[in-house]
Length: 218
Image 1 (cartoon, rainbow, N blue to C red):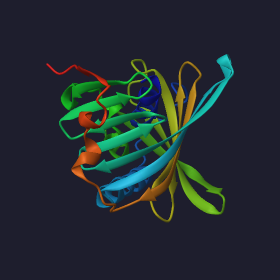
Image 2: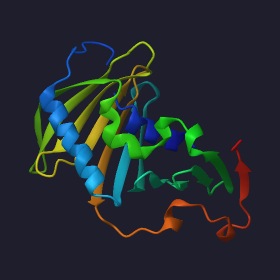
Image 3: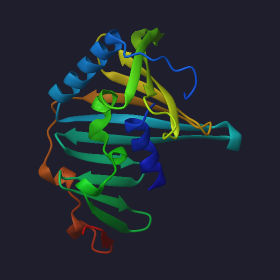
């Protein structure tokens, strides 16, 4: 569960409590708006990703692979062996190692658990600026920095996003937390207009008869 929370929190709250510019850069917003529009137009889509956690204080350097499928408000998120299924109303989190499933109402879930929000995260609670550009493996990317409007109440500090200049797709972002941890999420293998089924977004208990189900809905 912790790795799933870490991944999605990095997605939604990817945002240094120091040297923050008091700016809402219109050029940065223009790029981010296009990223958001492109993501909506590409649905249903899937994205493979790697999530690197770096903590120099504890000498930790760990990378986890995963995949997310998004269709409207529905999603399926795989991170390692764990899977989240969201049908638009409920979220079922499956933990194969423990043979357990937890079911919650979507409305009771923290926004940090919703990967659908990644492409609109900048619209509320953040300042942003276009810092420059960067070339990786021959491809050119915009470098955009995000900062929280309210730093005192946040555990995170700042984020740096890379957006492909040609496709206007999000490629990666690094999140810096006040405790020194750094998360770098790299998105790869973006597939748009994929074929999905309703069953992709719901946990089918009949296929896992030995799983213990905990229903946390009120």
